[in-house]
Image 1: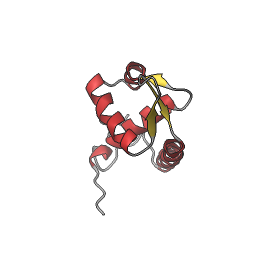
Image 2: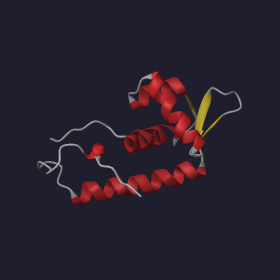
Image 3: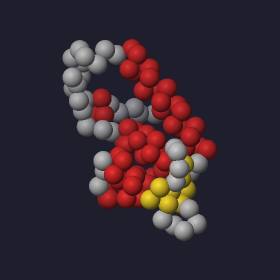
Image 4: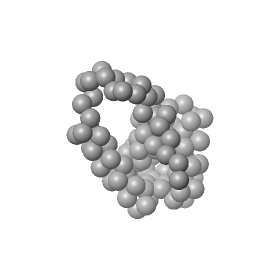
Length: 104
């Protein structure tokens, strides 16, 4: 079995999935995604600035926006593509997918 450290895209995807059913508190996001509070704060700041997530009026709950749902659908399609086309039981020619950089 191949394992690697989660990259930013995977963490964003997991946070959005945790918010997909209903709005939840930051501590619940941390528990569902197995992240510490500092990391959750970092990623929430990023995805709020991207308009993927919004804070509730009480400022304690977070919910996914339509833009976040659209991103999550595309993310899920990408994951399905990799799962379909890569045999994860075989050794890959590279050790860590999360370190691949795409430059514009």
